Image 1 (cartoon, rainbow, N blue to C red):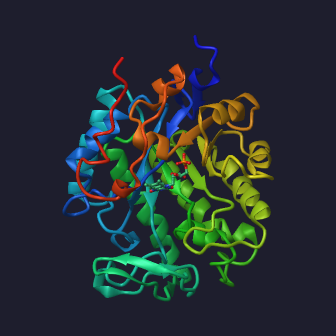
Image 2 (image 1 turned 135 degrees about the vertical axis):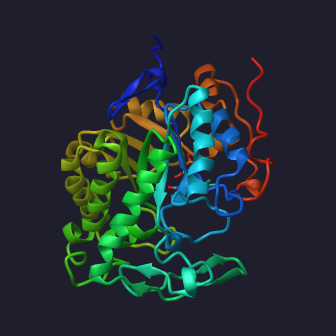
Amino acid sequence: MSDDVLFTPFRVGDVLAPNRVLMAPMTRSRAIEGRVPSPLAARYYAQRASAGLIFTEATHVSPDGVGYPNTPGVHTPAQIEGWRAVTDAVHAAGGRIYVQLWHVGRISHPLWQPDGALPVAPSAIAPAGEAWTPEGMKPFVTPRALALDELPGIVAAFREGARCAKEAGFDGAELHGANGYLLDQFLRDGTNKRTDAYGGPAENRARLMVEVAAAVAEVFGPERVGVRLSPWGNFNDMADSDPRHTFTTAARLLAPLDLAFLHLVERVETEDPVAPAIREIFSGALIVNGGYDAETARAAIASGVADAVAFGVPFLANPDLPTRYRLGESLNTPDRGTFYTPGAKGYTDYPALDL
Ligand SMILES: Cc1cc2nc3c(=O)[nH]c(=O)nc-3n(C[C@H](O)[C@H](O)[C@H](O)COP(=O)(O)O)c2cc1C
């Protein structure tokens, strides 16, 4: 047994992950016709199977949850089949893979929507900035506020996405509750101005997320489900008047579901992190992410702040990241120009160490 804390196994729900170097979810925009994961995706993820756990790129649960070119979904038979090839390849390589379930809410555009409809959101507030559309970048539109009687349909879409993901062979699911997408739009008060049971106090704003988590937990079992949260992120024009209160409230309301994990995007240099407060509220595994390297990850785990650390860019560029961290080897340089471009370049061609 290693005395390096990164390589001690840890329990996440009913899974024993062999190490604490996890792969963060990363959109790579390489899905093929029908938003089916590309055959290259099986190779890409299998190359990274030595991660304690892999989180996939964000994967939409319904056609109205789409907001970017060439991102994959998990709601059609072809998508299920495409993902099956990915999960089989990861399992054959000895890994564990959790789907990240996604609905972009207002970060969409009528050009992506069925019948050219307006994107949906908690409230009719346009984000500042531009949407990626099939015709290039265009200003965001003002979304349509979901009616109260439409919210069960959102929960049902996530439940169905989870069912499809389970059929595709995923080991579990992470809800994308971070980075300014639909569940995060409901949670934070900059984007949620509702006056019904889903708006107002943080307890109400967390309601949709909790209902979705419960529905996905019915499919996979709570021991295979977690939620990703980004308390401080302003990506996608997000804001909250009291992030500490909002996010500890969300953790408190999620806790009774007995989920396997929470995954906090809270950068390593955050001065007054919310992770310690969440640790006290939530008894499942706590994963942190954002700017970590091997040393800062060891420190976070050794201090008890987190059980594991997810790595984004370092895993993108280093298929054998755990081995490199274990041996103290240098890392490949990420090529930002190919993060979101088609094909193998910058995707499956980063070399592993020649040991
Ligand atoms: C190319 C790229 C795509 C990303 N896509 C997603 C995504 O689909 N879902 C998500 O929750 N975060 C996404 N992120 C954020 C990462 O999961 C992670 O939070 C971020 O890269 C910071 O971690 P790092 O410093 O270890 O890279 C993405 C990041 C990158 C670089």
